[in-house]
Amino acid sequence: MLNCTRASGLTFLFPEGDTVVGQALQRYGEFAGPEVDFLVEAATAAEGRFLDIGANIGAIALPFARRAPGWRVTAVEPHRGLCSVLAANTHANHLENVEVVNAAAGAVRTIVDFPTLPLDQKLNFGDSGFHQNAPLTPVLQLPADALGADAAVIKVDVQGFEAEVLKGSSEILRTGRALWFIEKPATPESRREVFETLQAAGCEIFWFFSPFGTRRSPRPRARNDRVNGDDNWVATPAGVSSPWPLTRVADAEEPRPHHVDAYPYLRRYGLGA
Image 1 (cartoon, rainbow, N blue to C red):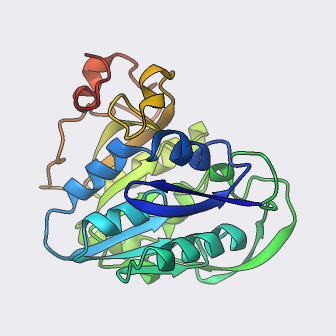
Image 2 (cartoon, rainbow, N blue to C red; image 1 turned 90 degrees about the vertical axis):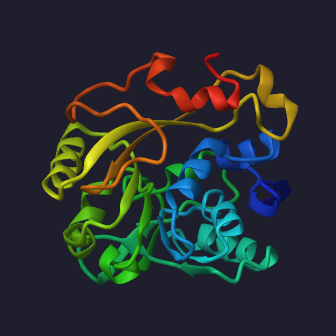
Image 3 (cartoon, rainbow, N blue to C red; image 1 turned 180 degrees about the horizontal axis):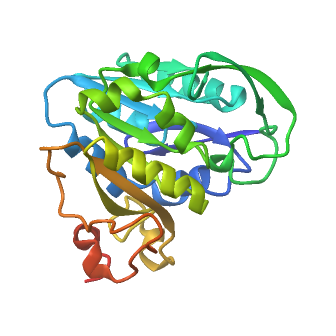
């Protein structure tokens, strides 16, 4: 049911049937290297908190924790099985600066029923979320304000639940300290709500394409592979610049630009040159 590989200088357990994160860790020796690099470079202070909402098995949170040892990492995952793998990966790699929380992030503190896909399936476990048709497991739901109101960098990967996460982030948004890295919401309604909430908080919003593997990935297999990845929004608070040059999102319904000039950072990874 579980497989094991070395990636990003760490040891990872992962569901052996995972078709995205686990497969990338095994094939490329990393997952979304440019995303990890960006988040680490966004953590400009010597100390701080990184809040990873929808942490899965830790493919982003744990490399971040390894490279930013002065930062506290709160890794939040509602899927009980994935959270157990995340905790095992955290302890196996002796990452004492990581706190693992088995919870969903939402508008209020309550108990919710979360669809829990068995780990022996062959599928994309990164797509776990409230939209899935799977056996339901009671899980604690907490506002992001309760999970890490002092967070300076926040990643949100929650498969359509992004607006609900922001509803529980009023204190974080009010203080205006955090840089947000959010997978682009899937539906027009959610995109509009997330976009307008971030804008109302004074954030500027930018595109970030996050390739799973690149020409500079540790294992050479990535060099000839088709480039696959996720579309994301980066939201910087008022007065804070993005650590990398990024292309602004004009409005919530704008499609992601597909020309490489919109993502100059990709040239660092051998893409689009």
